[in-house]
Amino acid sequence: MATRKEGSRGSVIIAGAGLAGLTAAKELCDRGYTPTVLEERNVLGGKVAAWQDDEGDWYETGLHIFFGAYPNMLQLFQELGIRERLQWKKHAMIFAMPQAGRFSRFDFPNLPGPFNGLVAILSNSEMISLPDKLKFGIALIPAILKGQDYVEEMDNLSISEWLKRRGAPPSIEQEIFIAMAKALAFVDPDKVSATVVLTALNRFLQEGDGSKIAFLDGAPPERLCKPLVEYIEARGGRVLLNRPVERIEVEENGLVRGLRVRGIRDPKTGEMQQTVTMKADKYISCVPVHIFKKLVQACDFVALPPLTARSAPDPQGVEGWNLKTMPVINLHLWFDKKIDDKMDQLLFSRSKLLSVYADMSNSCREYHDPDRSMLELTRRRYSPLTCLAGEYEDWIGRSDEDIVSATMKELEIFFPEYFGEGAANPIRLRKYKVVKTPLSVYWSRPGMQKNRPSQVTPISNFFLGGDYTFQRYLASMEGAVLSGKLVAEHLSVRFLSSSPYSPSSLLPPPSPSPPFLP
Ligand code: FAD
Image (cartoon, rainbow, N blue to C red; front, side, top):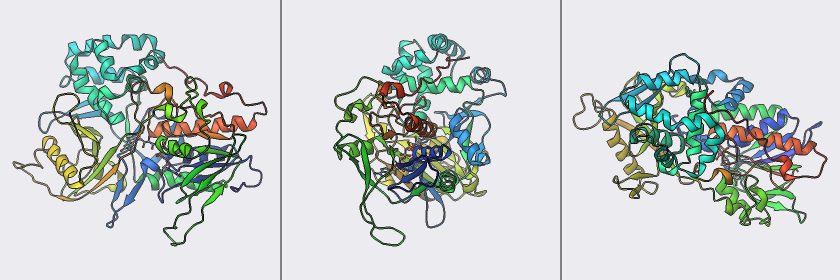
């Protein structure tokens, strides 16, 4: 049995020490429960995990940025007493231009939203002409008039289809939405739900600081996850690494009896741990959706169909959710000199391969180097080979050398002064690290919003968290944190409720539906 400290309202086991699992544990501590988090790997953070190489340089699963429109994440920083660890950048969005060495900026003045956004858009004339801006404004009218309900209804369309249907000029997709779709979801605009992109746009426009960007001041496992663990442990909870959950054990009455944890060799002591079934009053899965699917396949409860609380119960159960994860590649390039010491921002690449990148030697305090740049870049699995739709080059199986060399070619376009044959100020790549995650973020495809499961399940002692579960944010750190808060809240309600369980009474309360613009 998971330990329950004296006076605790109950014990809870959580599978997965990503941001969702750790936030759920923190929130449960705040509510008087005793959580135990079981993490498969020997590192905290899941998709924000990071490691140090032999020289002490950090490399990460992904380049992570925080937005002003992340209320739950900001509150978490506040409650952990680490707000100063967010390094806020000047309020601007910077896009690489197709012309070599040129960047275009949207600078947000210090005005309330949406006026600062409107000024930023109107004062940039390099990327979109005034007539095209006006046409885009007209395309947005139904979203402005009907608000978030309209945005939700658009989920069956990709953002590309939505722009065409609304008569937005092609330049809008070309100049803005390719970069936005790649930055938000690592895919092209024809492969991401319109709801997801419009929701982000809505928040960016509505909230004065919504699109303001912050970098964490160091590696997420140390600077964000560790304070979470300290908070949890100070309140009687536990976070155990190297504890892979391999099976959810179910009683005949359909309740979860325990989580079976596979015995593995302890990497520190070399000791072989025993396979055990860990038991608690309630259980939460905060593992990624593809892992959860495997756990469900491995257990007897194919009787899970009504888990899809958002839409009608699907006889195929978890399979019927049809939620997929996407591969993402994260690159780290260490150079022998500084590229441009003013580049202290996230840059939207708009290139074939890259989504976003930053010079972390400028943007992140712990990675600071006054003399040498370190670029961190995220890129997609596929890159278009030609302009013809459907012809894509798959990069996930390619060697690190191939990936780095293709990336260096793209850098020649962004920084001709430093890279390529004619470089006036040539710069040498000192070392690199490529982190490939073949099954990574949940893919916000068109039509999937209704399939995202609620945090409550029909099994009264079993709950779900994770960025893929339904909440108003897409698969992001904010989404993961919000799902952790929601699952703790639902669990607490169910603990307190003496009435027989009724799924509809425990569905997440409808989130307030903000207007598209104030
Ligand atoms: P995860 O982080 O996947 O956590 C799940 C945990 O479960 C992991 O620790 C995993 O090891 C563990 N686990 C798996 N199987 C088992 C098992 N059998 N037993 C026990 N534990 C198990 N979001 C942003 O907001 N801003 C960004 O800039 C941003 N950039 C990103 C860049 C990249 C390259 C990637 C990949 C993601 C990015 N994201 C970004 C998304 C964000 O990282 C995720 O949405 C969020 O971290 C997901 O958290 P989670 O807890 O839901 O899942």
